Length: 212
Image (tube, rainbow, N blue to C red; front, side, top):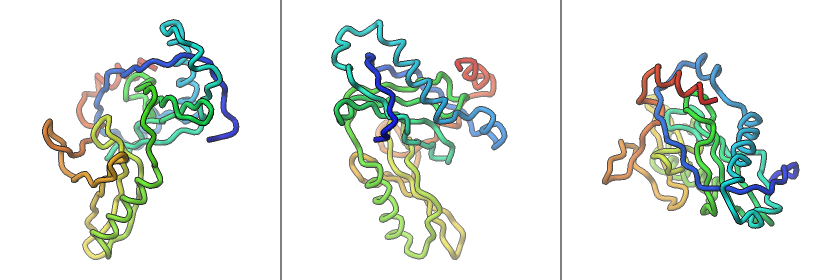
């Protein structure tokens, strides 16, 4: 955890803002509406302080601190989705806060999670790479990122490219079970993956931007 934390004594509530799916945008648009980690950190603090009036047990959060260095979560199409900030008290993780990394996603605050189950990001990514190398021993590892593969499920995605054919394959590993998730569309009854950047119109994107 970074040493230059900002101490907070505020109250956190579970708040899941309505998720909005948006289509892929070109590089110019993505850069225009992208959010820096510094800007996201300000939003995380501001949005949490707004919640203080709605909670009663403020002592629970006295001495808590938010790590200003977030984890970065990506969409399965490669675009950055969220900055995930961890909140600690006496070295114990007590909350996670997700802030949108792109203004076209809608409101800045995406999720406040209370007493979240910790997960090991490095272990998840290593497992993804391990399976990619096993399944495609002659392939070249292109990238490995933490992704939201089926909202709100988080895991690691490794992109591996066949050196002979040039075909790219994706390996998904769930961060809690460390089990492989098949690269196929998710359904109501079966696990799978889907992109959050695919399903709304430009008019809806324009409305989402106004929330910032």
